[in-house]
Structures are given as C-alpha cells and as structure tokens.
Image 1 (cartoon, rainbow, N blue to C red):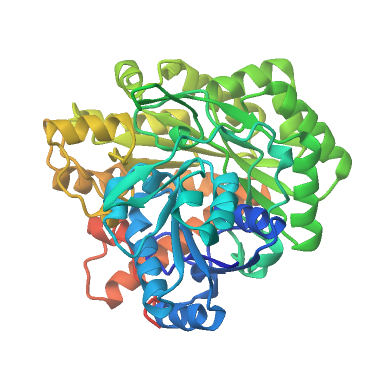
Image 2 (cartoon, rainbow, N blue to C red):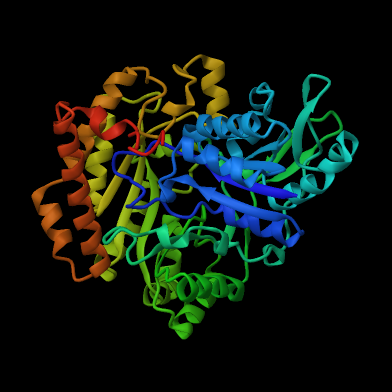
Length: 509
C-alpha cells in the first residue's frame, strides 16, 4: 500500500515557532519505519518545519494519491487539526483509508468514530497494530476485526478489538525512518536546542499513574476481564544502550543533529542503564549535548552513586523536573506521593551547586480545585527558592483518558469541550475560589514574580554556553512577542498575548 503520514498545519504557542523548536514528532518516523519494513511505500509530511499550509497539504495529498493516510495525536490541543487532515484526505481521495492514532483518539473512540470519514483508530502503542491493520485492510472487515489494538465502526457503532500486548523488546523495532523526515529543517534555531535539535527516546512508559497524565496509560499493560472491562498497569521499557547509541550516531553523523531532546516520560528510571549509557556516549565522543525529563528523587539517588556525574560528563546540559506543587497534600492528590518539598529542594540544590552549567527547568501545575490567589503565588515563590533557570506554570487540564478527566467530567467542572483550548496555557476549569479568567490573569503574574534582572544577568553570564544561549533565546522571543502585540494594537501586558495560540502566516497557504 501507499501510506501517507501527516502532521498537519497547526497554530503555535507564542514562545514557539517553526524556526525555534518544532522538533521531530517521534510517532512519525517510528511508524514509517515499521510500515516500510513490512513492504509498504511510505511518505511523510510534517507541515510545521516545511511551513506548509492547508492548500499546499491538499496538493501534496493529491500528488501522492495514497491508499491509506495516518495521523497521530497525543495532545488534545491539535486533535481538531488532525481530524481536519483526515477529512481533507477523504475529500481528495474518496477511496483512501483514514487512520487516527495516539492517546487522544485512543481515549475518545466513540467521539472520534462519529466522524464518518475516519475509518480506524490504532489504540495505544502503534507499530505492530498499524502494520497488521495495513495488511488486513485489502481483505475486508472480517480480517480487520482480527487485528488486536484497533477500533472501527461496525453496523453503525464503534467496536474496539482486544488490546494488544506491549512490544516486549523495543530493540526489535527498526531504526526510526529519519531519512523520510525533513531533518535539515528541525532545530534550526541559533539559540534554542542548538546546534541542530532533534528528538529521540530510549524508553517508553512510566512506573507511576499520575491522575493528570494520559501518556502513562498509552504505554501501560492492559488487562481485559471476561466482562470486557479494562484495567491498566504502569509499565516502563527501554531500548538497549547500544541501540540508543546507534540511533544517536545516525542523528549526529548523518543528520548533523548535535542537541538531542529525549522525550521519555521517565528518562532516569534505571540507574544501571543510565551509567552504561553515559560510559558509552563518552567513549563514542559524538560531540552531542542532550536534554531529558527526569524525576527529582532519581537525580538524588544517582548523584549519591556517582551515576549523575557520568551523565553530566556525557553531555547532559538541560534537565526538566515535574515539580508540580509545593504542597504535599496536593502532590498526593495528583498521584505523586513520592515527591515532597524537600525532594525538589535537594534535587535542584545538587544541580545548582555541583552542576551550575546544566539548565534547570521545573514545571508546576496551577488552578487546582482548592487553588486560591495566595496558593497560586506560592508556586512562583517556590520556584524562586529552587533557583530555577526556567519555571513553567501550567493550569491543570483534564486530558481525555486521565483520572482527572473522569472526575472533572462527572462533577461538571469542565467549562469548554473545544480541544483547541487544551494547550496547558488556557484554564479549562475554575477552582473553588477562582474563575478561569482569574487563573489566566494570575499566570502572567507568576512569571513576572519569578523573572528579574538579577535572574537574567546570572543566566546570561553563565560559564555554560548552552545555558547562555537559552537565556538569549528567552530574551529574543520575549521581545518578538511584545513587538508583535504592539504591531497588532494589542496591549502587550495582557495575558492572552502570552497564552493564546498564534496562527502562522503560512497556515492557509
């Protein structure tokens, strides 16, 4: 079959553009590689780096004339654009088979299949189900019904086949098909994820089941009982160190990507793997720097054993930690009882004192049900105590499939079902004490409470080149956002200037 995978045109966050840090969407080269290995002809189109709008995408679909078109979406905010891409494909190629995948569509099967131009959903981990589905389509509905891990319409209703077990050996998967991606257009910023940014992952899944997170569910073990009910158990898997190094070598030497952004949910789960990886990367001397999302308690553990020092020597330059909240009871309610205020303080103290050139990022969740202006401002004060280089303050968002989504939906807290607003910048629910509008207003206050001239000068004079570039990028983008708002006759200190998604100039072209 001729298969076309599409990442459609999309609006940007104000602090993101195609030139800054739209990086490789990992789902696309991974699925493309598996489909190609199974003998299919595969093409990909990632519209953001190509600056391809809807008219140009339509021309591309017509030119490729695919037998099957696939989209993948893990973030609710872009789901409407993925759906629009499948509708466009069906209008141009009436006989094309349309396939949606990713956690968003996995968790909204009924709603998704109400669109009669969407034929199939690949649920949870995609490679094996996608390849089997492509093989079964020519043989009709009975063959498709035998494919595990998918959903489709049958007799006018949504049907989900039995869940597919997770891939036990990630090394059995082919190398992601980076050669099918516009690699020269990713990570082109002079300052952000420079030089040459690209994504990569060595692991899938998590060992936790945080109530606000959908992604652990996407990569969880699924157990189905006789009555059809499904239960999920968190699971973490990893590629071998050697396969990960081989992938890094391809990115660095073939595609000149020297700043790698690991998108693993829990990068530093296994200290033995981390130590072996650091040793191998140091020995290979590939000249790469790298970023990872890590857990604070694991950073502390690895510092005590000497593993973290190895990681720093191997090129680790940026660590992002999900701090979430300063209050222990809120952390417990979110499903993160293993964290505490002292855990975060100890972790970032290690980074500040021993590894000052590593960029320290922390993320916080605000707008929770018991939120007050005082408790919201306390998160910014905690970020200052942690002496972060950058704090991200995000309103809690009821993402479909999460425990928090189920609770919020049952309680009637959700105030908009327009998924274009689910951008982790726009509040979706009010708290018991604050309206959505008030939470949104305070978001800019949090950033202003953290940012200062002293903070900026300390970062811009860092001995670490990567860290200095990050501060330069922050300054340049802030000035750009301000100038854009002024040119648009918008008061530059309104929250919407910094929170609302931005339509790129080429979006409709």
